[in-house]
Image 1 (cartoon, rainbow, N blue to C red):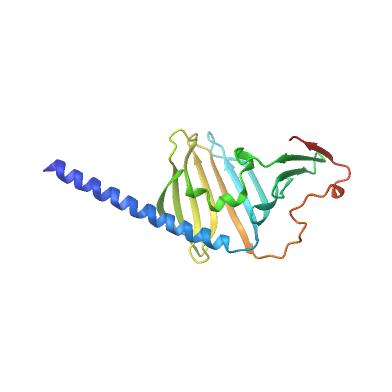
Image 2: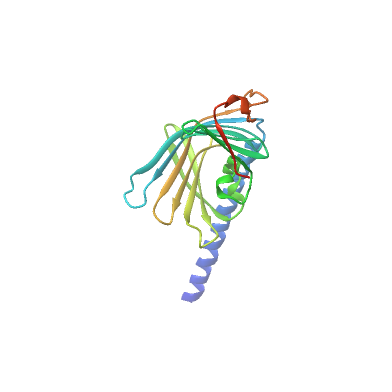
Length: 214
């Protein structure tokens, strides 16, 4: 009898988990659908990384990014990065150098920023998590747990503003104890951007060394 009860409890738990997983997926699909409806997106953000051993902040910075489809122009940590659909231009004002490379989706540092809104679709189990009130905004969290047991990521928490259906933050907790948090401070859509906004022009950097690595 005890075994039967335990079996029933296990079945109920599995069914409940499946429901919350589907609920989480449906919620993020709704967010992604809204994101795809915008012609352009402009975001100001803060990035904070904490150290695994001390728990203190090891890196902190503010940045800005403009998106149009897969095209982007990112400014962060004194580096401007432009992707024109084929090549990535990394511009360092401090070094007066521009590094030019082809976009390779297999390289981790070539992940497109738009994947912030779609990465949940593969490689993760989804769970409906807590609802928090943050400065008057209701933020619903979805927990993403990597399917790959060898992943260095323990879990990712994606916070979404329930009123606007826009991503508020992404918290990545690693197995080594480190953590990174990306918080979106402003989210503007359908902004008028010049046609050359996602184009690198050599003439704008006359004294810079152009380093073409591939």
